Length: 251
Image 1 (cartoon, helix red, strand yellow):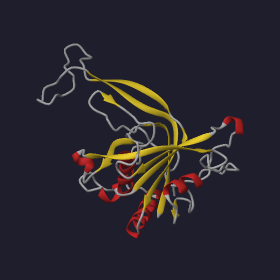
Image 2 (image 1 turned 180 degrees about the horizontal axis):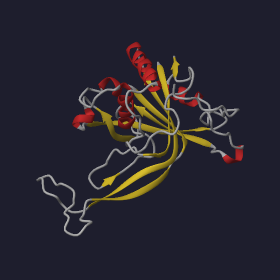
Image 3 (image 1 turned 135 degrees about the vertical axis):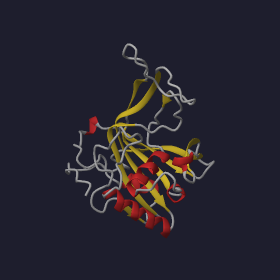
Image 4 (image 1 turned 45 degrees about the horizontal axis):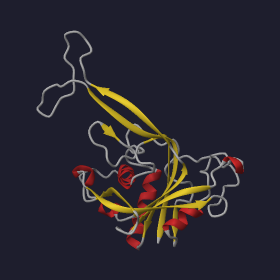
């Protein structure tokens, strides 16, 4: 097995799986559809192409810093000058009135994400993804285009690709916190970290509808997948980084 690690950290993130119309939700950690969308941007893969090869990779998330849920109230349309008609165009082509929406975000969250391949073909794919994350074709964003990453998604040096290691083991072994972050005193950091791991369908206790199928970003077709949540002790199971190393550039 081979695992590719990547860092998803930014002032605002949004990983919605149930967004419809006037309510745009976010999960508490990255969705698989959102991570695959980010990888498609790095690869320069258009919406019309299948993502089945990417969806076959198994995903796990280590929550290095829990985000704070924030809500943004937005309006679009509505007349704002006397005698001027302005509004949102409806399905019949006419201009309607004001449309409101509530959009939810995660503020100040930090995630370590792992993608696991179980054969040589998948390992080769991870190598290609790793190379393109260093020099992405299109802009990367954390769930929504208004949410750029604040640190490189690509891990520095040769830390990104872990060979002959299972997904959970790779996520546990990578030191906490991320490079460039001061290591706080023991009484200031969490006692344990949360892990959300993809399982065989029907095995994990939680079902999420974020498994892309085919040209999912064109057809909006997402299947269910199973995940399970576990916790690992920080300092005993997850190693703590001993020194504050400056964060490297994406290149």
